[in-house]
Image 1 (tube, rainbow, N blue to C red):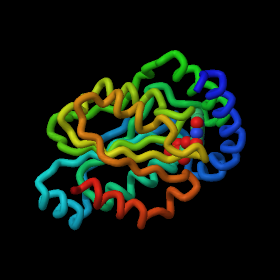
Image 2 (image 1 turned 180 degrees about the horizontal axis):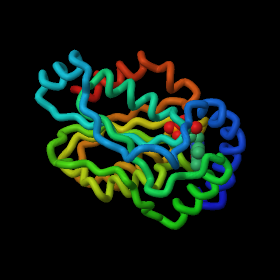
Image 3 (image 1 turned 90 degrees about the vertical axis):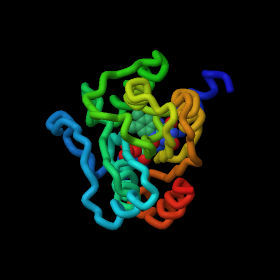
Image 4 (image 1 turned 60 degrees about the horizontal axis):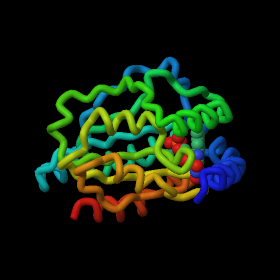
Length: 212
Ligand SMILES: Cc1cc2nc3c(=O)[nH]c(=O)nc-3n(C[C@H](O)[C@H](O)[C@H](O)COP(=O)(O)O)c2cc1C
């Protein structure tokens, strides 16, 4: 597809998505005051047990601007155990949807790598990374590219999950596979942002497949 056609298609999709995204972004909090991201240990006894059963160390890492992907990440964490961390840009995106859409487009076109404040001690210890983000302009938000460049996925199992506003997976999966060189990337889970908070069944089925 020519770039201009892609942009037209994306702009078309986004016009419709604005309503959806705003609708499912009600739990968005003021990022400017957000605490530094930290890796949280699992407190879920059952899940921790499950993690011990197959002997794998798990990290759930996610980026979320308006809360949909965060909700999916938290449900996955509840089910698989391990640790969870948010990928947080050092400079927060605006609370304003149009401003963020425009900035995301500029960053993607420039191949930017915005700094992130997320720090993970001993990333090497993890065998499996559940990595989630929203579809932004058909692909990953650029802070996620920074995360992948910083924390090498080679040799790890990477289980990708996405939320979208109507466009589906688009290049979210192919761009991840291209960037996470040497990783064993599982099938992805892609959920509509508007159903992200009510998808436990779908998440459970996918989680089972990632554990094979
Ligand atoms: C900057 C930006 C770009 C987006 N681009 C797309 C897109 O290209 N295709 C799509 O289906 N949804 C797009 N969306 C909608 C989000 O993917 C969707 O609302 C997602 O569930 C938001 O996840 P979050 O709440 O975790 O941030 C975009 C949203 C934003 C803010």
